[in-house]
Image (tube, rainbow, N blue to C red):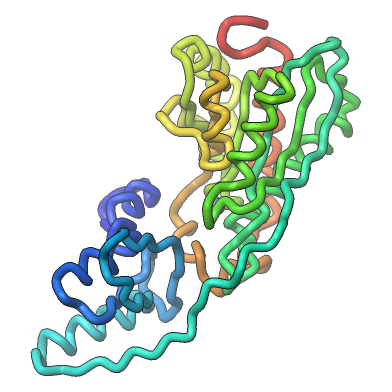
Length: 303
Ligand SMILES: [Zn+2]
């Protein structure tokens, strides 16, 4: 990952193809296995897992990810001795699918409305850690948004849902099913906010939607700036809310500080002790504020 990029998600985007497509690309050149340098912002001894896609018609060879320290060591050893042999043993396997569910909490709008605002994260995680940042944080923040609004005794005009999507990491089936049912039930989703970039200090919100929706979001930027939340309007939403795009929903991504996310992402150390309670709460509060603004003033120019 390119350490010169301040936005670690951009660095991840530039490197992750090596993991996703590396096995098939290597197999085309005759490789018997592939060893991937973990997608990480730091140097340590922790391997990072994640999606790998085998191309159809290409031999599916074994693939492993090793830590950044191990990768540096291995690269040096290969450079020093071209005849070096590497023994790879892996016991990974894909188990059969099981039935699972999205989990949804809802505050009913007072406005006798079929309009919805969704705030969500995803319940599943890669199984070697407990997925506290990816994406336990997003789930807890989504619940917290409803709790804050209730705590303030705020009665929303629109229906507000906290949605914990299932299966983001391995197929997006929760997000796809949610959008399918939303259309089937004629629920008009005016905005969806996703928190899936870790439970770190809030910095802003991305948006993917109409120009009018972007204009609405930008008009609220000054309300967040006193809290050092200033990064507004970059293109982007979230994986789970993405399928709502067909409805014309304004898709909004919660954007926290990204410097430490890829130290933990998809590892055995993405655990609860890595969550800072205050940072998590600041993020939830910023999301609650945005939900309030959308509920009160609308987004897309139609209140
Ligand atoms: Zn995630």
